[in-house]
Length: 141
Image 1 (cartoon, rainbow, N blue to C red):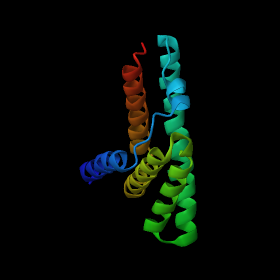
Image 2: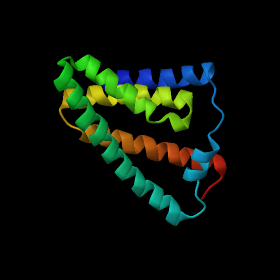
Image 3: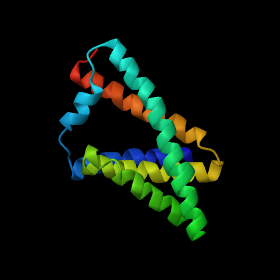
Image 4: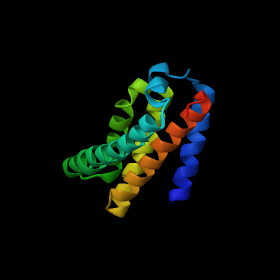
C-alpha cells in the first residue's frame, strides 16, 4: 500500500509540475539555502520539530477530532489533508496541492497504523530531501 501511495504521489507531483509550473519561490529558497554548515544543521534540526509538530497537529489532533465529529474516516482524512495543503499556501499553488495530497496519504498511514511515528519519519525525510535538493541546485554548501 505504501509503495502505491508513493507512486501516486510522485506521479501527481510530475503531472502538477507539467500542468501548473511554479516559478521557484525565492523567499522559500532563501530560507532553505544557507551558506554555512552550521545553518544547514540548524535547518535539519528544525525539520525534526516541523515533522513532529505538524504530524501531531494535523494527524494526531485535527484528524482525530474530525473523525470523532463525523464518524467517517475517509472524510476526516480528506479534510485534514485539505487543511494541511492550505497551510502550505506560501509555497505556491502546485506545492499547496502536493502537500494536500501528502497530508491525505499521511492521514491514511496514521489511521491504518494507529501511530504518527511513520508519518513523522517520512515527513522529516521529505523535508530534508527537499532541503538537500535546493542546496544542490543553488550551489550552497
